[in-house]
Image (cartoon, rainbow, N blue to C red; front, side, top):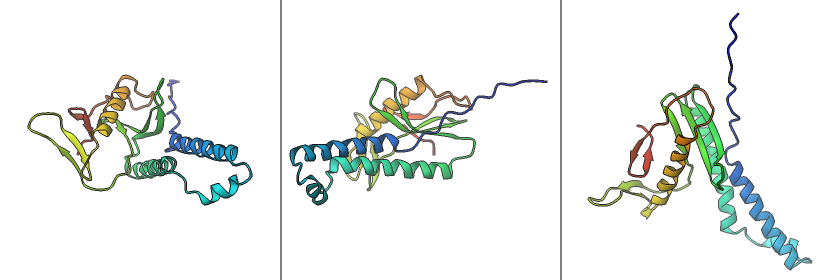
Length: 176
């Protein structure tokens, strides 16, 4: 009888979990500050106040990550392992989604933007990521950093495959 080693895939993780935790932390801190400052009318003040944008952005981000994860789960081949909300060691940052496929390891950073997306390639200088007329190149730079992390520390997940991707300067793109 031949006995093989079966490696269990890691926990897939919960999309948007870290963003939900950050939203809850910010909301609790705001509510505690209002309660400390105005103990008698804190409930009324909180009921009448709108949540600040810096707080609601985290809830919207978590919802967006959940939607991206659901879409990926529906559209990816069954052999692809999808990992969500992976923490980067010794960092406050996380990777929203990692797809481990036979073609490589794909790092996916979910953002909620609307408008025309383009890469402007000047004759001299670095290409720029522009969304709705605004320079969002920092997003591509952050994704490139996360992609470098994934190539140096790939998750222990079958199938074993190379981490690849086409790269234009610091902008990593998915194959067409």
